[in-house]
Image 1 (cartoon, rainbow, N blue to C red):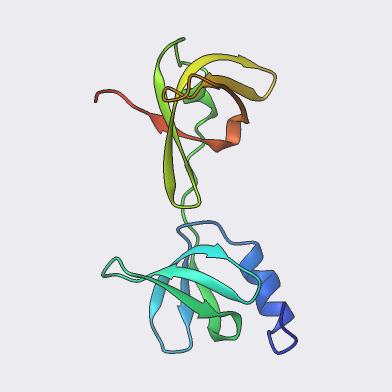
Image 2: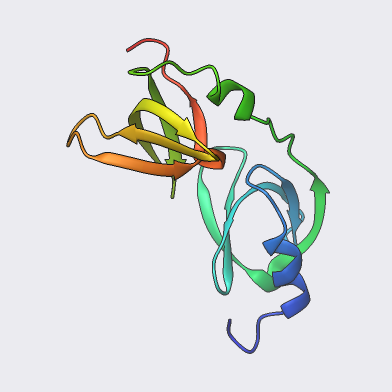
Length: 128
């Protein structure tokens, strides 16, 4: 973090989730996406994303509703396709089984095995 970045604002931003509504010093209310070392990424109402300096954060306006998807993960059947969103990239996997809190799956392109935490699950692909 740069020395001129406000540490308290950075700590507040680090506790936010994707989708939370925040107010920036221009008066706009935007949707929080992610936090970097000195900037945070927001999505404006027109769909564009912007990198905003940490010091331009004013306040949290509204918390996003977080949907617990762990019950949906438990209903997946072997061979069913699901996706995760990582760094604004959608990745598709073929479900195999769950062991503990890990999803074991295969990458359908490379057929390589992948193990990931249940919290990474984003949704089921019902039809292609």
